[in-house]
Image 1 (cartoon, rainbow, N blue to C red):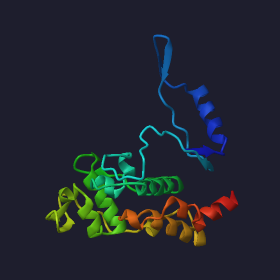
Image 2: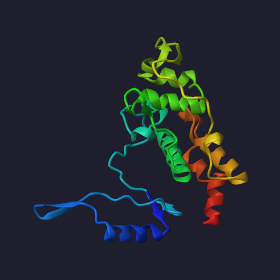
Image 3: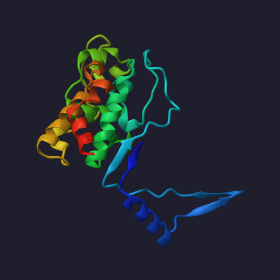
Image 4: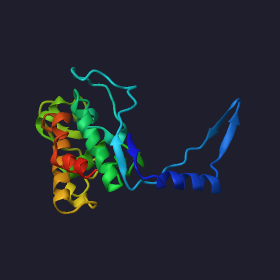
Length: 217
């Protein structure tokens, strides 16, 4: 969760509620309201850690399914053991969403018209290229998405078309110059197929883009 410095977001929220009250219903001794979305703020505050309902110790490897669909790390999708580095992937996707105003990955499958893991993997491949063999070998579900045997996995299965090859730089439209280069460098440190290649939270806390943003704040 992030704080919001832009008070106009709340002013607009109040004005919209006064002019167009949201639907509600009375149930017993309480009132249930339909949610109203806040508009995108011009400026965010500092991050706030919250919702530890699914938190687990990170010093041991886990294999259970976690994370909201579009923020799932590759090892989670492939049912490989995971630890702290899934949060680095998750945070990278969320930071991208905030600065670009749109999701990096949607996982939208045109055949089923909803999120599917195969569509999500196809988007990651289009952005980052093919996954390294050690990542595929660690995943119990890799054979569902890639050809070959459990020992030697090959290409992505052709039951869904791969999007056109692209890059983070092609999709980044909010920053310019040195700031853009630093931002993309940080994203590349966070969004790696192999969890071992992702930077740690401690390393990212001293990332040049993070430090420059804090100094400006």
